[in-house]
Length: 552
Image (cartoon, rainbow, N blue to C red; front, side, top):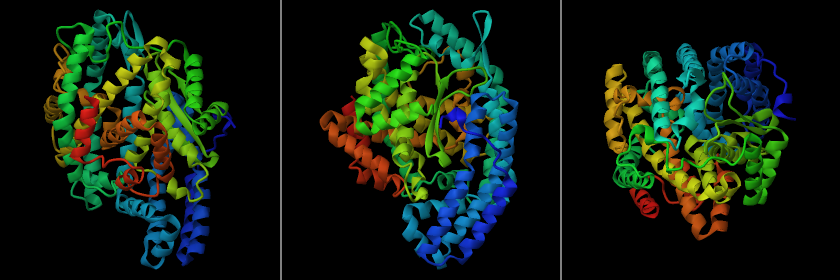
């Protein structure tokens, strides 16, 4: 069945509630592993019934102006927290001493630890706050998805400006960047207002749930299992010491490569004097190249990409009203992954199909996992699937870029370096904001500017009022929508770069390690999984130092 053929019917809360209550009653009677298995099978069937919620999410993102799916999404924004509360009541029963041992025998310790976090991180006391949080993130989504730029005498969707901001003509990219920045400045007060409300909302949820701040609540909700905020701070410190100097050197090399005396912010998107590599063809060309590169990588990825293409499990065209960015969504009742992307004619076309394809490939590998709960993922684990796949597919970039494939590989590696530092900056920013939720907008902006100087010291915002005011963080979707997700990208990139190094030494061993990492995801915590796959501990300064040496 193709994605377009999948029927949609509202996942009615009252019906789901009744099914949940019956399930909870049955779980109360379960006392041994066999009884719990039967209950969990019914719970999996109930989860399948909620696939329409995921369908709605994707179809709403395809066109945020579609009134039908906008209305449906608003319904789920209201009922979602109510369903979460019911789900937690069910999980609380499995965690009770009388049945915990039997439940753990079926599910394993990692799933039980995630259930504990779910119960600690949400209850009925925060339902109204969670509903309001959903409404606020919806406002942010609408603001950013419909934003336009005045460009060359016409209005153009802001997400379509990338080819201009990456133009090989410096004057064009300077004007394009200024136009985009002006668009962000126009939305500045509204974005600051929405974020202020989100910060206070999340701080209030933390207080109601008994956490010192939203920082601790976020670690619970993000399932930071097996490590602490102290280890993350140590990781950030190692990045400042080892990665940031290398990033400064890389920027100096890029300046020389471009033949410029100085780099300004509008030069940030350009890596080569003739412009960045772009695909040699249109959307159909890029999809064909995607299919071919997965076929060349391995038998497993060949089967995967045929499955995705034949069932049209992707949407890659940019359209008016379509949400920006990209993600993979699992459609659980169909056991199918779906790739949401925006092809803008730049190197992003190739990147997005490797990154989101990595997410989708791992889901495909575990789509028939009998214990569905062992498909639950920590985000740093999930991002390792995606970022490592970027490097495994890097040797096949001639399919997209022809003679400029090596330029793409250079650009990709430089971006990987930047990403580690940038995501650490976001993490430290959020930690300080949520530990001090009464900061003013001005204080948050000043904090961002200070951290920018520590993590991205080569940036020069001269002439850009919006960025000089410290508003750069307002352009980051995850800060609004998925707080504290950023550090997962940095940690995952450290694992992905280890795979790049291993690929150069022993490609078959690297691939088998990656398959182990994918298949055992959901059964152990991040650090244990990395060790099981033969990777170095991503938190350790020695690991960062080793990678910095290899990258250098």
